Image (cartoon, rainbow, N blue to C red):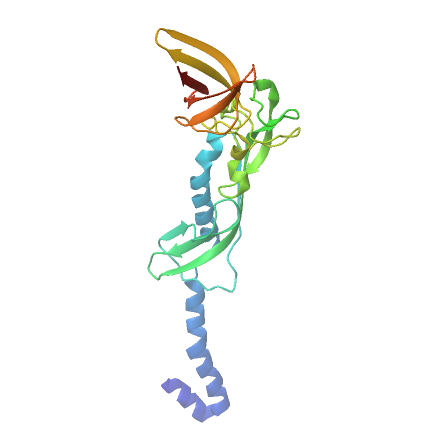
Length: 249
């Protein structure tokens, strides 16, 4: 600083003031730029987090995962970090358009949020032809389509094509051709609905007779239910686990 004041006496105050500004303001700015975190490291951290969270699921379902993470706002000045950690912020989802948080654990603590597009596409079941409610699904009723699934929302309930338990289940709703099948389209097999076909077993001392009928009302296993027999007679029995109504004589 003494050199500055000596120069001011020799060449005038204006020149010294200009030099003083360069000394006090220019050097800290260079140091701050040198200490900024590389945006590419933030993108890599968020991308790795998403791939680790969903990659195994994509492989399990025979699908593919596409992850695009955008760099932070270039106006952000984030200090260089020795320990980055990516995470899913509260209220955000892993798929679709979302935000992924990246925070610095040291030496200076900070956090930022990166926009991301995450697309998980897998083979799912679809109807091969129009199907009525109550129809019991067989292999010829089904086809496979590729579709994007999510971790939340309606598309999180699509039935993946590797779920072979779909065969033999009844539909809760009618479906048109090429309709993607969701969990809610399938009827709970443990619950009996009005009109469902059931086996009726008459049990007594020394005898057992079986017949068929249709449920008049709904019931769950262990509950009493009325059944209209083919003869038109209505009987009351107890629903078993396997859609059998047992009558005790």
